[in-house]
Image (cartoon, rainbow, N blue to C red; front, top):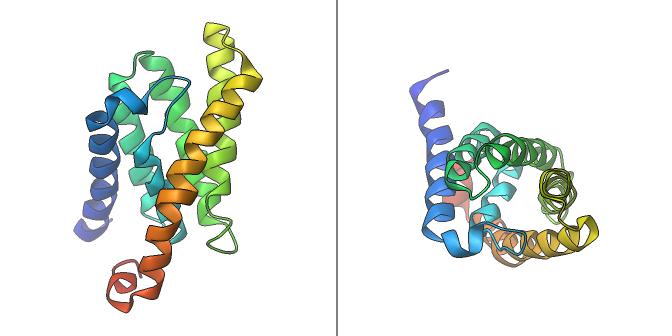
Amino acid sequence: MNTKKITRIAFYAVIYSVLTMVLYPISYGPIQVRISEFLTLFPFLDPLAVPGLFLGCFVANIFSPIGWIDMIFGSLCTLIAAYLTRKMPNVYLAPLPPILVNAFGVSLYLHLFFDLPYILNVFYIGIGEAIATYIIGLPIVLYILKSPQLKKYFE
């Protein structure tokens, strides 16, 4: 792997983790809008975003109130969502994997480890993910796709 690829992976990891930690009050817990999740659409543009987001989520979750549980399971949810986003046939479907994987996956481990209400958490986390991906992320990705100068960076 060359230096340029490592740098791009690190870029995604740093942006994700810093945004999550700076916005700590709204980034953790069952009712959250993790703004950094807008980056989960970037695998649609760049395959290097997949490992970068996984690493960024892992680092951000070091500071999670639930510690190792979020580090392992939250990061795996992000990895799965990022991989599936990469496989989406069009940009308008790209937000679905992060929304669905996190809503159902994170809610599952919150329920199993902390006996939190599963269906209610699916709803809360799904809404937070939809805000981060469809309302914040999708307009950014669409702008990148329409800008030859920006799109060039992701090729």
